Image (cartoon, rainbow, N blue to C red):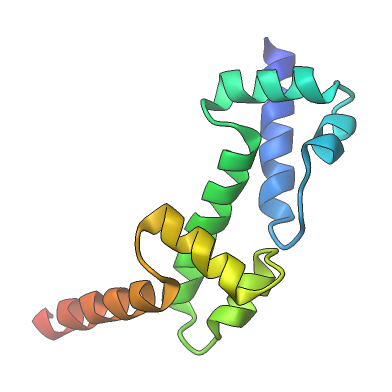
Length: 120
C-alpha cells in the first residue's frame, strides 16, 4: 500500500515536471517497473481518474493560470509550453475542459481582476 502511494506521488511529480512533453503510459509504467495494465489500474484506483484524464486536467489547470498571469504571452506559445503540437489542439482541449475558449477565458479573468481592483 505505501509502495503504491509512493509510486503515485512519484508519477504525479514526474508529470507535473514534464508538462511540456507528450507523456505516455508506457513511459510512466516503465519508470516504476510495472506493466502498463497494472500501473494504470493502480493509478486509477488511487487518483480516481485515468492517467490521461489526470495529465489533461493538470495541463489545463496550469495553463489556465498561465493565461491569466502572463497576458503578454500568446496562446500559441502557451500551447507549446504545455506539450501541444499546435494551438488549435490546445484550444479544443481547453474548451472541452472549461467550456470556454482560452482567449475568452483570459478576457473574462482580466475583467474580473479589473472589477476587483476598482472596488479596492
